[in-house]
Structure formats: structure tokens, C-alpha cells
Image 1: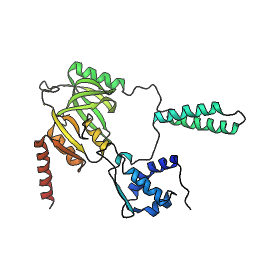
Image 2: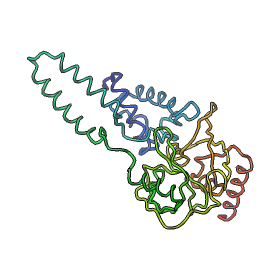
Image 3: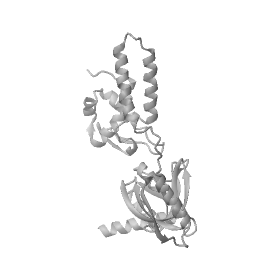
Image 4: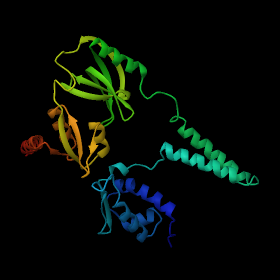
Length: 298
């Protein structure tokens, strides 16, 4: 007979179910019951709970299990091994400190276990709690020098969305702070358009002798294009790609881009994960490119 789990165990099982289902698509409810040591009715209750999860009410987890076999989609943000944030870890530290103070001193066995637990947790967060600045001051100084001297720079930039470091030549315009992060507005010679780079993702920066092109300027050489998009998959990657997305009440997002060609490439690379809603002219252009590709592949 399977023991009924308590609420804490149920919450832990819910967090573990998503990554397990992603790697075991089509598994039966009976097998899930055995794997997680829970009754089939509890597993069904968990699946109904997961069905209501998501980043917003417009982006819920897509589950199929009516046939007795489970498939899952659209849960990329939950598809990871559960872990504690720094804030959650700090809360646990405060909690076990209070518990230790309340313990009877005759229970040295529990005091010893709590001390061991605290030592373990301390070792896990010691690399997070530090006074090291997130932005390399030498890179920031180099950018400021390039702006003052109207010089181009060679930078190594780490793109988190595809975990790749690329070499670029940029013409920096200005440094700006947004959401407690430092960005540099610049003209990217490789992309041949304006770009915004997070300074903490620039791994190396060297000021060159090349002067900036006087025709390049932020917001003048290219006018910003306001777009509205909907995210269908890989939400985290899309946010990394666009950097500055503002969510609308209907679940769509608004942002500004400076290169229509770059946008078309990103939408095609997303393979259905990004849908451009406005402007309609760009939406139709992307649709035309997709149809041409489909024709070429036949």
C-alpha cells in the first residue's frame, strides 16, 4: 500500500515531476506512481496542479494525460532540477539559528546536526555573498575612454541566450543604467546597426585607433522600430535575446529594435517560439520568408 504524502512532500514531488516528464515523454500514470512512490490518484492530482502552472495565465504548462500516458510541453522555465535561491537559503539559515536557540541543551545530538547543516549551507552560498563588483571596472573605464575619444572598440561579448562568445567591433555612444544593470549603447559594425550590450557580459575590451563613423549615432542613423510579439516557447532565451521586453496586459510584449533584418533572423531561428504581431508589414515579410523556405525545401 502506497503511503499518502504530506503537503511538503507533495510540493517537492511537483517540482521534480516536470524535468522527469520531459525526459520520459509518454510515460504511464502507473509507472509515475511507482517511480514517485505515490498513489495514482495523487499523481493525477499533481498533474492537474501542474496544468495550472506557468509564467502567466497566457503561458500555462501544456499537459496530456487523459489516455493514461503523460506528455508535457511549454514548461521550459520549470524544466530544471529544483534549487534554492539565495533569499530562500538565507531564510533557512535564520530559521535553523532560531531553532538552535530554542533547543534544550541536553539535545546535543540535534545541536550538532544543525551546526553541520549550517556549515554545509554556508559553503554553498559563500561564492554568492561577496563584495566583488558585477562589472569589471577596467572594461567600464575602457568604454568611457572610447566614448570620450570617439574611438571604436574590439570586445568579446558573451551571449547568454546561445552561450557563445563573439568578437565584435563596436562604436560606443553612451553608458546607461537600467534595472540596476549597466549597458552600453553602441553601433555594431558586424551587425551594421545599433545594439545594446550588457557591460557585465563583455569579457574583454580594447580601445582601437579607428575613429567612429560620424554618420552613426544613437537613434539618428536608424530609427527605433516598435514591435509587439508573443512568446510561444523558450521564454528565458527570448528575454535574453531582446534584453528590454515590456509585458502588456494581454500577455504580449513590446520592445524596440533597430534592424529589421536582425529581427527576421531571430524569429526564424526561434522556430515558432516568437510570433511578431505588429507591425503587420514585418509580420507579412517574415511569413513570406517562411513560405519561400518551405518551397525551397520541397
